[in-house]
Length: 181
Image (spheres, rainbow, N blue to C red):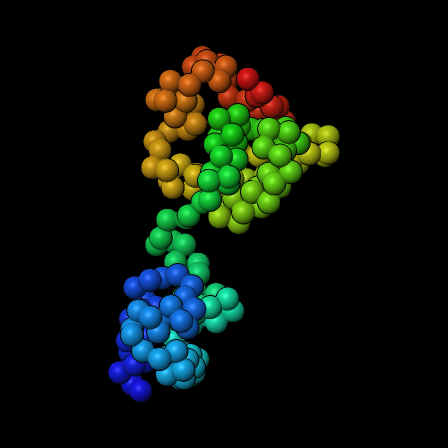
């Protein structure tokens, strides 16, 4: 049983994705019943050792870092963004500061969820506009660090040769204004 548990642990470690018992059994060429029994023991082993890892069994089985240690992981590993969230971040970066209401018009109602995710990851900041009706959103230094950018978005626009209506001699838009160009 110990050898099977070690082999299951290796599978979970290497795949780093949610697997079902039948998937693990097929990979290891073992009976699903034996895999399930060994897997339950392995889950108990992880739970009893109070380490940084756990086997989550909510939608299958995956070896993962416990919630209380995710801050360490985020410092060491890059943030993964789904394509729709990345597109929303691109709009924010190219039009910053941008009103959240304009962002919703450009990216649809899912933009609110995207903004929340980007805020949680520290890639954008959001502040109430002068009227207090909407938020102005802009990228943070963590955004530049994540994408390994030197300078600000204006430099990126120049580098990519994108004309967004910002001239080099033009002062940067103030917090309360929106650059819709």
